[in-house]
Image 1 (cartoon, rainbow, N blue to C red):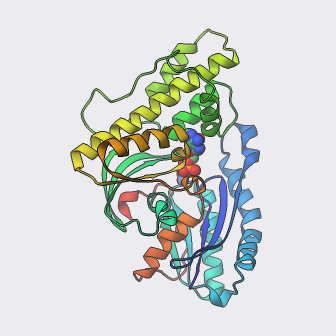
Image 2 (image 1 turned 60 degrees about the horizontal axis):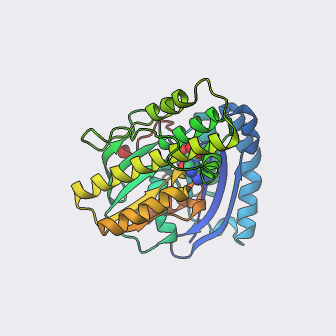
Image 3 (image 1 turned 135 degrees about the vertical axis):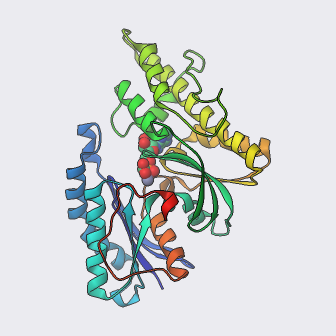
Length: 333
Ligand code: KG4
Ligand code: ZN
């Protein structure tokens, strides 16, 4: 039987009807494009927009999947990490519906959703595997042993990779969200015009640091007026540095852990240059490589449904009680 899942951790409102065996039955997703005028996400506006979009989207998904409330087995929702107000909208709605329909709820960790998202495209992808999660809020390497059993191998000490993309895009005058814009501009850039560092590569360990890279960009262009080609050249060199750093850290991890399978996750994995570099790495190191299709790299409800459904299948699910944790760690699930 299907479950319903809601995702409202940041600026995407997403709903899905999902069955572990049959896959996605219907889904809705709306990004808060209006946030671009503020150059970032205004939390209060995010909450209000979720509130207005969520209920009609749930109705639409249920209708599209041709379900009645009696067909639904449980409701999963993102309980964290994320913006507290945005999370509370999803949690309140999930719990209210579950209360009215007498269903259990499954609070899902957003990062666990990302981590397992590739299983939406590759249902046979089995544990254990090594995972690189690179999103707007997090960048980490983890050993994924089993559902809920994750070991942290390395993480960013400052900015996340996506955050570095967004901040550098802003420096170059590109609109928010900057990651995809910067990636598009980078394709027009000439490699080698600018050189940026590969942070933390000359130190042992598996941690990342991206804030110095952003500073290097600022220093390289300070006091200069850039034409479109200059900006593209900067974007190209910046992207190359991030991609190289992520790739080299994955290579180091593979060598250290003897991993045979690498799974990529998170919004930054939508980046084509990163995918190409990881394809090469996988060939070179002889590891199996999986990444989600583009729409399941960035925030979506299907990944929340999948993690929730796996947990429900092993007996989890609780009476509706509104619970969110804006800083919920992946290693405390
Ligand atoms: O996973 P996600 O949708 O949300 C979080 O949980 O953070 O990731 C969003 C991040 C943003 O920083 C966005 O700029 C970045 O992923 N991103 C990209 C690309 N598409 C999205 N970064 C680089 N290249 C892209 N094509
Ligand atoms: Zn996310």
